[in-house]
Amino acid sequence: MEIVKIIGIGLVSLVIIIILKQYKPEFALYASLSASVLILILVFDKLFDVVNLLNNLASKTAINSTFIMLLLKITGIAILTEFAVSICKDCR
Image 1 (tube, rainbow, N blue to C red):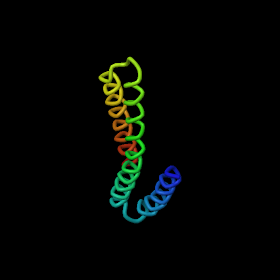
Image 2: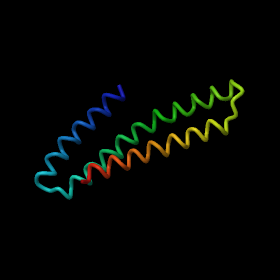
Image 3: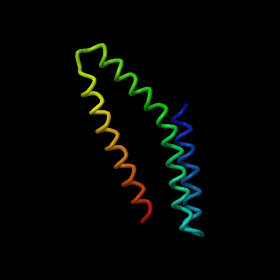
Image 4: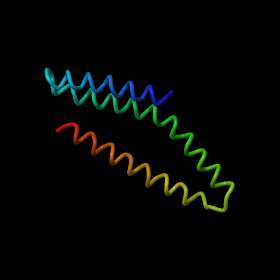
């Protein structure tokens, strides 16, 4: 059900941003950023569950937890970079 909330927030914010771009383009950026932060907060909750699952799997196997944390950091950097690129593309 969380995905339905995220999709709903995305669609409602999309309509608001399209309307704002017609009348007040400077406020469309703020609406986009606030919707993005709200979606990111909702995703973080599920992301913590995934991290805990990976830590549990790493503790049950012979994989060093340092490698798992390194992979999670690299993945996090890639996601944040893609997020920043998407925001920059929306600002054009």
